[in-house]
Every structure is written in C-alpha cells, then in structure tokens.
Length: 447
Image (cartoon, rainbow, N blue to C red; front, side):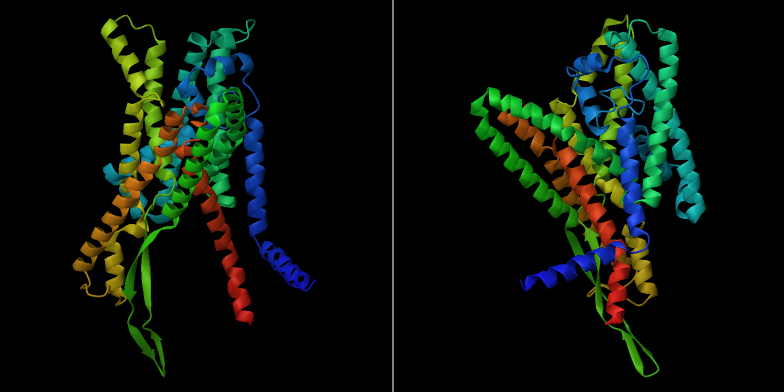
C-alpha cells in the first residue's frame, strides 16, 4: 500500500512532462500525418481491380519488395503507390551532386539556411521528374504485364494519362507530408513513413508464416531458431546505433575575477554508425533506379535477341532474391556509410581541429592543428569502417537465415526492415528526450 503514493507521483511527473509546450502538439501532428498516409494508401486508382493485381504481384519479387516499403500502397495500386521513394532518390542524387558541382557545394556549405532552402527546392523539382518516370514505368507494366488488373470497361488512354498524373501528384503529396512531419512533428518524416509502411505489413507476413508452419510441423524448430536470430539481430542493431568512440578533450582553465572557469575534460563522441538508417534507405533507392530502367526495357518489344538477353540477365541479377543483389547491397551499404559520414557537418576532422585550437582545447598527447585533424581522421576512419562492415553484415543475416531455414514467408521482414524499424524507433525516442531536456533543467534549477 505504501507504493501507491510513489506510483502516483511518477504518473504525475509523466503527465507534467507531457504538458511541455510544443511536445504534445508535435506528437499529435506526427500521428495525424501517419493516419492520413495510411488512409491514402487504401484509396485505389480509378479503373484498377486491386484483388487481381495483388494475385499478379504475388509472383513478382520486385513488386513485393517495393510494396513492403510503401505499406501496401503499391500492392493495392493506391493513389500514393510510389510512396516516398522518388523523394529519397532525389535527395540522394542532390547530395551526390553537391560533392561534384561547386555551385551546389557552395550553396550547402557557405550560404547557410538560404542555400539549403535552394537545394531543397531543387530536390523537390527533381522528385517530380523521378516520380513521373516511375509512374510511366508502372503504368506500362500495368498495360503490358498486368492487363487483367485493369477493369475491362476503362478507356486505356484516359487510364494511362490519368494514372501517371495521379501517381506523380501522390508522390508529391507524400513528399509534402514527410517534410511537414520533419518540420512540425517528431523524427524524420521520410523515415517515419517507411517505418509505418513496414509495420503495417508485419501481420501479413505473420499470417503467411503461421499458415506455412501449421501445414508443416517440422518447420516449428526452424521458426523458433529464426525468431531467435531476428531478436539477436535487433539487439545488435541497438548496440550499433548507440555505440560510440569517445575522444577525450582537455579544456583550458580561464580565470575571470576571483572565479576559475573550465578545466574539465569533455569528449567528442564518434558514433559507430553515424548514418543511422540512411545508408540502408539510400542503398535501396540506388538499387531501385536501375531496376526501374530494366523493368521499362523488359516491357518494351526488343527485337534484338542479344539486347533482350542482357536485359533479362541484369533483371535476374538485380532481383531482391538473387545472390548478386545481396553482394551489391552489402557493398552499397558499406560505401554509403562512409559517404554519409563524410558529409555530416559535425564529423569533419579539419573543422573540429580548427575549433579546438580556437578555444584552446586539445586531445591529450596530440599537438593542436594539423596533427589533431590527422588523428581525428584516423579515429573516424576506423570507427566508420567497423560500423560500415557491421551494418552491411547485419543487413544480410536475417535474409540468409530465412533461406537456410526454409521459412521464406518472413524474408520480407529482413534486416533491412529491422534496421529501419529499430533505428527510427530509437531516433523517435531520442527526439522526445531532447524535447524533455528543458523540463529537466527547469526542475534542477528549482531544487
């Protein structure tokens, strides 16, 4: 009975934290946007028989793979079937171009917020272009391969033009929602939408797995082993997400009047996985681009036998179920982790060394200036290498385990999905904690 007052105080403290100005509206806004996204995912295109398309798409590995990240929007041929993919692809291309094109690099590094807004505007325009191309490819696929999914009394010309316009507009609307969630909500909007899409497909995979195991009782031990591997993978993901190499920084003492300030040691945390879930998302988006082009060529009537063979072979190699796809996926994650670490502003060794020298701080045993920059570069390279290799390896474990155990119904919930789900969930929690910090400081000052 004596525990009730303590529990009541904890509940009151939690409710008090939720009353922090700005936190509750952000959380409510995030969930409202998620609700709108899920509602739009259930609105099919005019003239589509979604049931027939689902039966046709069940035999297409690429459609099933993309459908997982769209939260079923592609499988039901909804108005937002393209999802957030075009926006992510456009963001990747703009970040790559910012490294190559001096004008974009200047906008990103030297012109501050105004420059970033211009780059964001370029990203939005390029998103529309990519969405239009992907919509064209998807409509061609419907007309050529999935013709039975189109209702018989629909004018095909009107259907094609209208679908391209609607799908492009749906992608722009999804981009708008993602940016609003990032600006006014909690967490990264694009990652949150992908997270919700993956979560919505889990009951589907669980139901298929249960049906498979009920039909074959010998698979029950394999299922138990597979679930243990999934749990172990999630633990490894959390460890990678939170692990960091702490570099000790010695700060100088300053005397102002009769008081002495500073002199306390701090540290710079170099995360093992500085990019979080972004290398995974970037790798998927990059792999989807050539796959989309090959899909377009595959639906065309290619008369040249050699060219047709090349297109079919490349399409097979880039299928999500192929070994070559997994090798390329591994290399992309590994390389993109390094790339993402190189473009993060607070992970630039030269700038960190310059700032440390400016304020009189230093790393124990290392001279300020260029030696500090070289030491930080070595540390960052080692930690990023370990993190990139670990992330790329973990990304393959569940899919390989699914193939080894013979339970392929859970292959859709592979490491890609697990890394995104865990990473986004941790990012959401960390941002909530960040919003709670002012309340903690206020309580501390009142004591």
